[in-house]
Image (tube, rainbow, N blue to C red):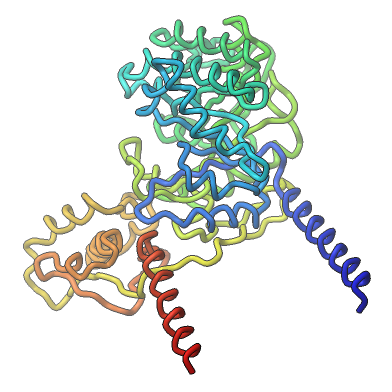
Length: 485
């Protein structure tokens, strides 16, 4: 083949690859992104997660911090990013404007170079006005928001990147239990009015987290079908009918904004999803039911009765996180579309067309050795069992053992083995972590039982580095050896 022919052939390959990327990116509805949290004992390597996002055509991601290695992994991908400032870091940017400018320089503009990161939003705080926080962040959230936007403006990127606050839907309420009764909670109303006027002035969106699952979980008499999108109970409000709590919640916010002078403020759903374990209503079947209804609604561009049209939202979440707080419930560690190791949980079509198939799993995942810690059933001295289980579960994730959860139907030996193994894996399989006063032993046969997975820990970042470094040393020695021959 001539050089000219080779160049033409190469150019055709490049065009073909561009088309492939375009096809991949079009497999997800344009308004959909995902939340990527990392509260796990050994989270998946960032580059593996980014490749998983790309493989599944997911083009938008919401982060909970500004972790530098994560942003570097997203550089050059074209994936749109919402960066987060955790609640406990808002004080850094809430005081002197110079501190906010330094933060923006280090965490935002440093990544805006050619081939950098496509940052679109900065979420200042994460649900800072939750009732359970007892007003801890009330005095710093708005100043932090103001300073970050001013710093973005001064850096010359304020037109492209907007500062907002990721809020829980509990900042508004309806005393009538109907959307038209919506208004901000009394204890945060003054702050919220300041925030929404600032957002409106700066053309920034109102970001809100809406969870139909929590409506079902927190209210014993809540109508089951009303948490989903396929009909059932309806409520009527000013000649508008609502058949699901998502629409009703969203339009309660619309009414709230309208009553407080910013009825046209853009709304983005920062988090919406359904957990798959940790509660009898948290499982793959119901998660699929919820997502199927949500995606059908999105592809039809139905919007809500008061805001018809396209919705913009971030699914919660991408991957399970086994170190999240379980104070709200055991389900908190099981919101992922993927398990902890990047394996998909159930068939779903993120294009909304109903062509369900399993999402593409993470590639290149490394597990620790196939070793499990289980109850030594030959040990008849079981008087310490309760204390040892309590110890194991205090430092490991035993949420799948709860009532209605995936591992709830095992016998007592299975429950004990599960607890022991979770502790053993979260201690990176150290032999010392499989003792439990002589009640446990290490086995090399998969200890999983039925639908209950006994997971293997992922190789930690330090061990991956050590492995790579060790291999490079061996390769170097071999190269030196052969060069002398």
